[in-house]
Length: 181
Image: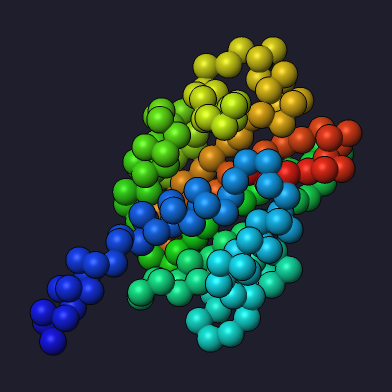
């Protein structure tokens, strides 16, 4: 029995690695929120059923049970004033202390703000690559935001759960074809 538990632990990747793989595959920059959800449906993520996380909205969320972890995908687009905000994220109900370092490895640069249990990365997406956006001037930031290239990626890990979530702000003129990070 103990040997089986050890083998299961060795063969199943850590939840933070599974979260990052899911984020990287589903929260693709330039993909509309409904496209993210459709892709998740095709990949076997669920919109209902046993194991569904609390605070679950089937119009914007999906879930997947992986080993002992339940992952929740959230993809949303909302409007406020003259901007459209597009979010996409993966969360789990257990702490993932390595999540910020996993995001740092994916992006290739350190967070702009790191508070231990949470981190915020400012990123530009150009030519299918992530670039550090933490040192942009005000003018460069405005230009990146106006063209939909600026993202804020947040990580949070505490005893109640963990999340990696990206935000993209788009001007309303571009928002008609709004895309998800």
